[in-house]
Image (cartoon, rainbow, N blue to C red; front, top):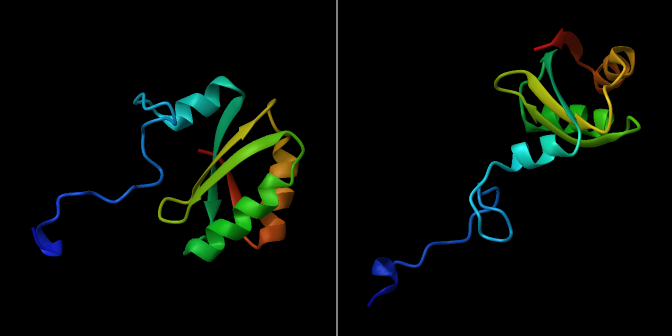
Length: 103
């Protein structure tokens, strides 16, 4: 068998399967442990933008995860409790973008 016909598939990160092998949505897993809020952010155009917004929002106390998507302008935040919109707005402003509001 040549290397070109090898059927072994590479390991993919970000799979829907958990570390135990069960299929599930990892975002659903995170929602069980906190409050999920989706925000609309104006001005993100690339991965660098996503990183800047993610970094700033991640510094807010109680935030456990942030997922920014430049293509849609949406930022999904999981936190221990509902976040103060003013704190989220300040973080997005610090990153250099505009918080439109909750999506």
